[in-house]
Length: 335
Ligand code: KG4
Ligand code: ZN
Image (cartoon, rainbow, N blue to C red; front, top):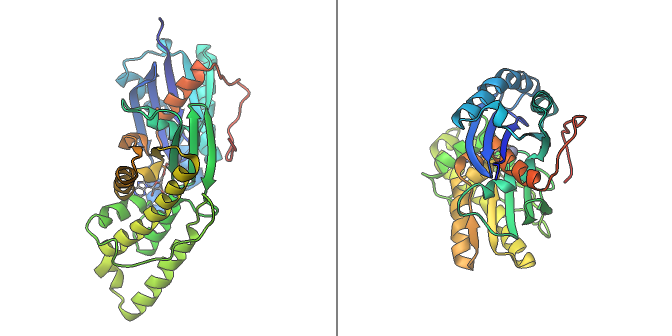
């Protein structure tokens, strides 16, 4: 049988990434992270698109090279079509469309959030269907039921901030640079998660809310620093550990509810926040306690990456779901 070789491109936010996948196996996953946004305390969309234009050719080249794949070996070109920053998405979309036209190969459009979920299929020990996936990133917080690679249903989501935003915004209150999520994780390792308690939202069903956590942390810090201006410095590790504990707790309580409701006991996590060590450990512990099978993608497939776009595209290729050359990207997209 002829092998199916896919070149995938991800450019939805501030990571330019390319991946080569052969028969569902990822041979390369190159990621160029844009450092320029750090100084602005968040991603600047206009700058992001410009840097994608600079990065895309070298990143695609590097991905092909690492996979020992020539342009002529490619059977389809995949790209992230939605959701994301429109200017960023446009760069990857135009690049993929041009390449598909030039090589006369089919084009596959991929939904970024579906791809985060399917990142769990990249490893050897993959979950069997159906499984639940908690997808937690800088822009989204969702509980998804996956019945097959292409049959995904969102059964819960945030009504305000995303979990990643909760990490990044509280990190900002602590004076940490953007993106603060990984820094909270780092400091939390040395801190006591029960040192401080922050308000937990009471949202019915499987939806989430995180704006209250941020407010609760804000008021607490205002009160403490009034009495002791060095409060944050003196308690940084404990503050990070307690904030992380609060956010992870909110997430996992809903996952438990989702398991109870659906009776599905294979549980995955995905998205940038799934790189969080507190979340990874707590999910594993909870799985052992309740008898679930838990899965955590390899670190490089948690953050935005083209490997997850490639694996999704592979399943779309098998299902013959191709896009036409008149397709355009979309900042927001239902699925
Ligand atoms: O999936 P992702 O790379 O981009 C989006 O699609 O949003 O997720 C980025 C988010 C950021 O909010 C970042 O702070 C958070 O993931 N993040 C973390 C960790 N690593 C990344 N949050 C907590 N702990 C981490 N280790
Ligand atoms: Zn993402």
